[in-house]
Length: 112
Length: 113
Image (tube, rainbow over all chains, first blue to last red; front, side):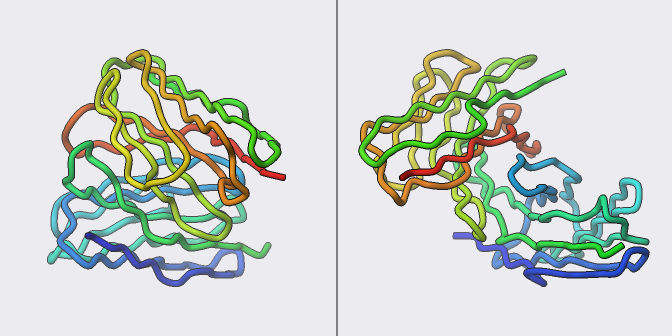
């Protein structure tokens, strides 16, 4: 089965600083999804990556998928308190029902 | 546009009582539907998924069950809740086959006393 490992598990940064969250897969990634979750709420879809070397940006968040399609990174530039939350990566398992397997999440706190 | 609704938002139930959580999707047809559980401080665990009416697949053996009586309705049930059933339950949908993101509801926080 495919496993996703996220690092770091938690992160505290000063407002305005840049940060990177990593997601490493035990198998080739055919579809990698980044989500953000605020405590007690549902997951908000951020970005989807499919091709090796692909990079997407939304506002100050950039996600990349490496050429070998086994690792993805999420980079936040000039972090703000609104970026705080839990970031999860999810991967297509290619099993029936198009299930996703998720990493354990990275808890981000941004100090004003 | 598509929307997904889950209710109730919070629920406190005694051990041994029954459970029914409901999830409905609007603005799309024949979606794949999913139930996840998120325990405190842990990742998402897929419980059930459905690719069509009456079609339910279970990923984790437990005392929970799921049903899909209508195309855009997904129900999570239990006849007798256990303490270990406490957690945050999330419903999600995605468009049919292929690489498409799943979209999540706001979740139900279930506390078992």
